[in-house]
Image (cartoon, rainbow over all chains, first blue to last red):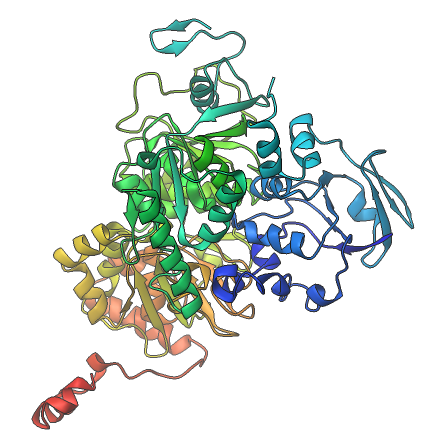
Length: 164
Length: 467
């Protein structure tokens, strides 16, 4: 079981890690401690490895800053479920090995603080109020994610998964 | 696959510009939704991601980038270095550039990566370029497919010279008519963002029609702002150096068509904290501001500074307002110095920053305090974007910015451009008088009464240095 952290629509990467707390501003060992420092004070202290983020439309829009995703990875976020994702954020999550799954109903079903279970195999997010259906990832993205990210995939296979 | 006169033989419905470019790059007939692996003509890397890019290359087991002649490196996001930690990061970046033998390196003060990429000709029309910044869509100003990516994607691109892309759907934006005086293509693109919304072009390519012959700067303003609609790329059709094959098919399929009549366009204002919360200026008139930022890859070029100087020449910014001008590149800076624009802005009381991203992203130079209200010519007004999360950011054109600096409030710039000197002064006096009291009046050297300046001169060199 993991805790769900619920966010709204158009959550931008400036909210995840403000530019002034970029790794090259505060150091590689500290930037993740500023995750959601303005949008959700206390998040970085309270979040536990395996916790799930749940959001609405256009999750992760704005700046391409991968350190927003790297901060979530460092904090051990186990997956993100949203109505849909901004494209650069989506790529960054796949590349760094954080499952990103679309679900039309999760954000309405899950309350902030709920205990939830992300079941990627059955494609469901189990929540106290019911199960949210997760849209399966494209095989290309699934292969990269299963390898633990794009760097691990490329080291193992030497090239991208097949696109045809 | 058969090639006919440099183009691929195709089947099925007509192709959008994105389908034409990605089909040619991947050497097959592709349509929206297909995945492609494409060669990259350039990779753009900037200072704020270099640590992660180097780590990614290292983890990939790639000691060298795939082709040093195709890599462009910039120090612009926090430049010159505002803190020792940033300075260390810049030093690491310079050593990496030297170690790799990358010849194309623009250090602090040369300008914003996107401006230089386009104005110095690094964007070959019809090719795929990836950049470590979300506004890499800007390269569509030159007819290139420019896409922003995160550090690991950039490391992979640097190591392999290739990337994977999902061929995007496209939105066709057609401009008709002619801009009236005091209205700019910034207003036009904000009108488009208002129409499409911050995620209306998510994963899509925005294709601009009817503006291929506009000046390069206007095309950068258009292409770069497609990022604020969630777009993967934004490409201007019919740019001056476009090869003959680089055009969408007549029967191309679009997910949406948007038409904007420039003739009836009003000055547009984005209201915080959303870029798509855009209103005609009439709804924002009288909104007080504390600081005005003129700059960024969106509006930091000579013409933008000239438009501001058109309003500010021979006048002084409002005593309670600060104006910061940051040219988008040294080339633009030099041009603005040569024609007297920079002198006019400085004499009006502007702080002139070194060319680069400046305070647009809140890392250096003129960051905002809590409760401060900024009118910015840049592209984002998110909470906390330019400094304190308690600050508010309105976005507008350079004309709106100049009038805000002069009066201390947001106003329609058009009456100022038409007014006689006396009418102009009356307009400014009225707006200043109506402005609610905020902040303190600043003493600027040029504001001093002549007798004080004389007194300072008489008292010798030591006093003059105080200026």
